[in-house]
Image 1 (spheres, each protein chain N blue to C red):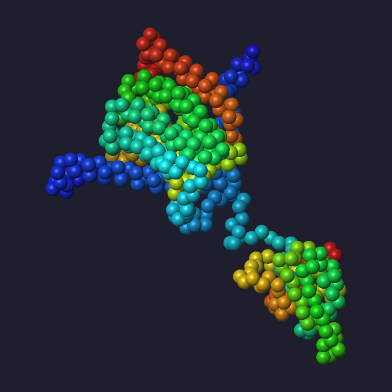
Image 2 (cartoon, rainbow over the protein chains, first blue to last red):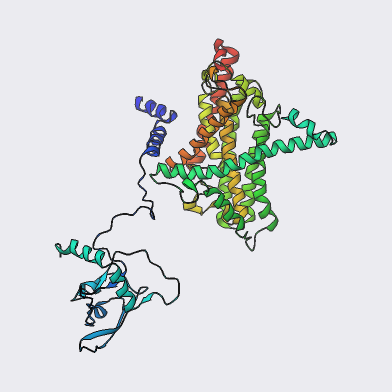
Length: 163
Length: 348
């Protein structure tokens, strides 16, 4: 009987509703957890798999030896490689295209590469403005590699001890 | 204001002087009201966002302050699509039917002691009549759309508004028993006293709660928003509306919310009266009225951020089996106390 009366009193005084309102009322003044994206960014792992790049040795020689392991391992068939003998007798790629619409960013190409040539950088903010521009060529990949070499090397360095 | 303008309008015939003064007053009420509606949508998104630990709109202009203007421009330029089997005439008329009463009811709202467009003696009755008209817009919109969801939403909304209309009306009967007048200005003046203890919400506390909750239900707001119920019936009665026709429903909804907030402030919280006599601001007392209205407006948003939607049968139970009995009992209590016991002073 008393519990019933108690329940009636609670119902009519809206105590539970007021408790709910207090929760939201408190949160109104709580610090916000939103990251204001273009101005603020969350930290990225050194293993982040973003846009691809082709690296060079410190002496400027391109690393890729056209072994085509990346082409073979690519589950999305996004990589197309053609190779030929260069003047100095070494095997080099004449064509190295990655279709970024086919790519699933799995990172297998980087895992497969015996000379750490093809890598995935942490660049994830990129877009294309013309049809066909999603297929990036060897030249573009090398340029990305040259531009971000210090970042790429630093990321590999941080991750080295866990590999 | 009338005295201020009259010398400039002398050259006009008398009926045109009266007409133009009324028109200027209407513009002076409707323009700030429309701005308030626009910024209520902004406040809603911002406050609910803050309560959910988000930022809310912050891209358009400083702190996102231009967001409502961007929204309005977008809706202006969008196409109005009329469904192929819809009743064209009713489809277009419905939004107008829902916004007209929402705006017309402001005619009798006293902003301060002297600032009121029409000081009608049956003001309360006029407000009740006009807020009831709003449901026609909803029903006609649902019917004319020729869509299952719109029709279901309209039916739900109609049943809900009819149910809560009664509780709301009875709550106001309590107010007019205490005030002894249907004139909104008199109702407020009746609450004047040294402190806020003379306001109606103390003797009429149950009726105040019933009125506020019915007001939320009446305007189809969360947690009573089954008429829209986006997880159940998409957007309810206005699914088929786009562009400006949709915007007008939106304006009507928010104008109604502001109206209910303003009426709550007038009926139960002493309208423009200051909380203690020492804080009387003379001509600037409108600040008290606006502040109280803003607080109840905030409550609407607060409720939406807090409570999950009622089930349909729970809404009907609450309206018919809880609110109406409470209001009737309290009316009897007031009546008996005022006329058969010496407790009359409590309800003055």
